[in-house]
Length: 346
Image 1 (tube, rainbow, N blue to C red):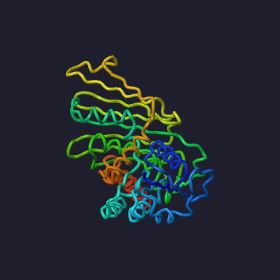
Image 2 (image 1 turned 120 degrees about the horizontal axis):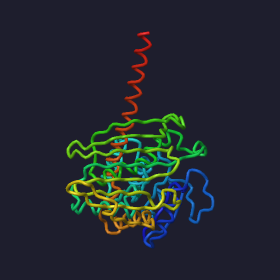
Image 3 (image 1 turned 45 degrees about the vertical axis):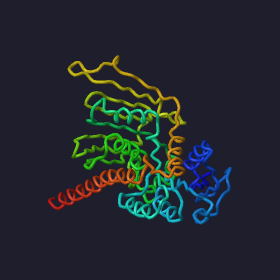
Image 4 (image 1 turned 90 degrees about the horizontal axis):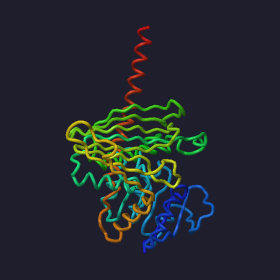
């Protein structure tokens, strides 16, 4: 039995609790939130300190405000707990390196909640890529968008100090992680970041970015948005000898539509593949949450390394986030310099 506690018992904490309950190997012994918890079905701790000090607790799930993730993970590892943490792992790649330094001092397991890797369609895509029968990945395109209403202004996500950024670090980070997962990472990036609609300081509502692996030549484009009035998830992977297109993502809300994966081989010469050449796979059940917790459980019980959602995965995705936000800062700096120069000339 893996005695477990959850720090942060809001929306995500409750989702994790439901997934944990599906596995008999886990027992939720305690929960805590930084605001008063109503109607919990578990014992409520008085503080996070109480959880970290409890020697009967083996594993801690961190589902707190983004700004707390880094420190809570480090404290959990130092307290001798296995730690599972929601994304983002931190605000910068440098902060993730600090986490890794703490991780290297312990034998406990650390895993991050990039649950999109555990969706049925994504698993299928990765398996097909790894077979090599479609050749190597040439390019990818990802679009991930949602809309928010004015209630968004009442959440901590509009505070950059708490959230770390806007739609990219909130949602687009999942697509970046899938890019890395499918093609092995990127070291170049160019991006446009805007907040034309909600006008929130430091909280972008759109990101248009292009990434490239300078060694393999693989490129990927991302549009991450919170002004997508009709929610969308779309991931396209094109390879030497075929393509895979995932449209929709199975979720409990159903707002992203059906999870439909299309796969086809290309033609050696024109005309290109036709609709009739495609094979479609429909994934009607979202088991990603349970799959993810099961992977974490296996690593703990078998004392084997976490292989999906590792600290290395977290570091690689935050390097891309850093590059996007650095583009934004540089563009703002260049614009100010240009405006200053124009004023002087006039």
